[in-house]
Length: 415
Image 1 (cartoon, rainbow, N blue to C red):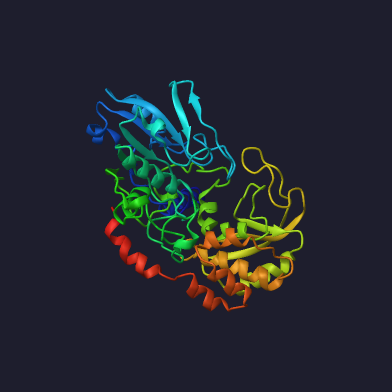
Image 2: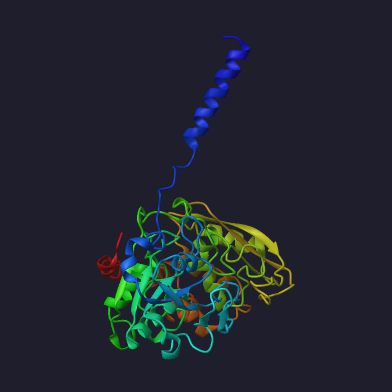
């Protein structure tokens, strides 16, 4: 074989190997919004109020408002925005004012300002309410409670309710975390579900509606417009859909993957990456020894994750985090590297991180007890950490009621 032929042969082999190593072609997933016209009869001749934000695009990049505006004999009469606002630019916890849409000349009512539930006045020109917002898959993400509040309002004021379903971006198979106890119910956790619920918004709507969890045990006139071509094991990057950050500090699927655990750091005085380009993927404080913390965490041999020493300075970031913890202070800590997201238990990893921090720095840790407990949905985890209980016991506490929920949720799964 000549040198020229040999080089050609190697080139062909390289091309074939490269082709074989490529990821499978994503399925042609259709969101509920993509399937809108298939359910046109729900909206024909109706005045529609849409609960939405900047994430509600179909697979072709068309926003929900434009999709409904294109429907004949359908009128958009009101828009409603959740936490962070309809444009998704408000900071966490920031109150959002109602306004008017200058393009459509319809009101945009805030459901994270003077009220978190649509009022009679807001719904007086609405026949049917539509919900389409991308959830993140964690119990303490507030969009699903905006949905439940709106479902209650729909019942109270005689409106029907439609959910245009979207995939759970961190997959619909993995279910992790203890069940929220009723005494810790707040807007970052209203119902007895685990931290990582493994359900779509449409499935959650069915669960809330049919379990009698809505206020007064009411039941909405609910329709879920389902997804097509989605399987429960799929992560967002396997669907063919773009990842649109659903809130200012959720910039990537990787951040969403760790969020069910590292959000717990909001309950102690640790910077959880706000004020950086990698929120929830780094953590630190001025008084931490980065190398020591890294060594201790890696010794835990948590599945699917490794820790690297990390040093950074949180800064003010407009429309994301203008006053992060330890702003402009040099922080030392760790970077979280996911090595196998399918075996990674994000919630327990968060508990293990808090446990390790308290073990190393009991005098520096400042607990925001109420907030930590409501994120966990119980005070038993914090009390166990304070009592020096081993991680094995914390693992058991982190799974209280989990198997029962897994069994009960089966009745509400659509896919």
